[in-house]
Image 1 (tube, one colour):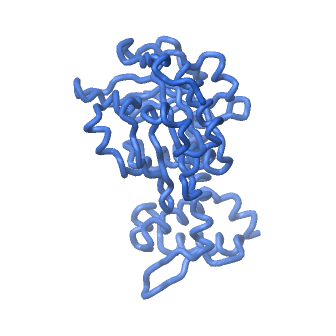
Image 2 (spheres, rainbow, N blue to C red):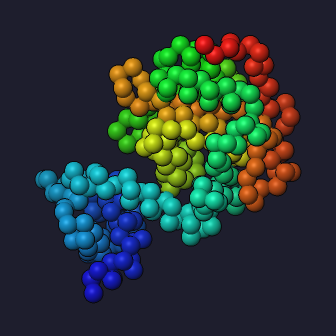
Image 3 (cartoon, one colour):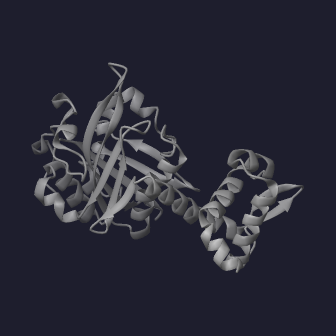
Length: 296
């Protein structure tokens, strides 16, 4: 009976677990969830019963995650964020690939559709194709000389504990050309989850990074959203293709390289051509790939 009941309230169990894991304080979790101490304790007990091991321990009346709790938390966050997005018709899959729709009714619109890598050779720019070729030729080794020509166009991330930290921004990258080199550099060291759309949205985005980290491969996304225009101090539409590449630092640790090309050549289910082309033409990136050296 308890098993059937816990399955029926799985969403609430996850909310209690992830909130307590964040606050490590029962009173704060109760206030955050608008719940009761008894209910939160019952949810945690049910989870621990079915997981077969404790998720928390009490030290000086302070909750701490056990090793089992630390292992369980990332997946719980993913399940919760995907569940919330699914209920709001913001997340689904098309041909087995991710499709996100945060429309104009959300704080900031964000549309994403993952595409098969074969799409690179259909309508991606020479810059994107060149980036993929560099990754393949370098065998993912970020300091390989083959990456030298594409490196100025990349943003590079490293996982630190549970966060993805930007550690390098190329001076020719989309981010640098959008915000300006000085302001772009100030973003080095920031976590990608530091976003205005909330933790659930940030967790969904982090999942794309986690996917690439898990398979050490490459992922192609088409994205449409809005970014702040630093010159006009206003939000403007932006459309782009993004290539996430799983790489390695010289010490063998994982590096994630992101190559972005602002373009009107994107395709996202449910998004009209008019919306895609609402990005001003002058913001389209036109990289002269002739300046890039031939691959060795």
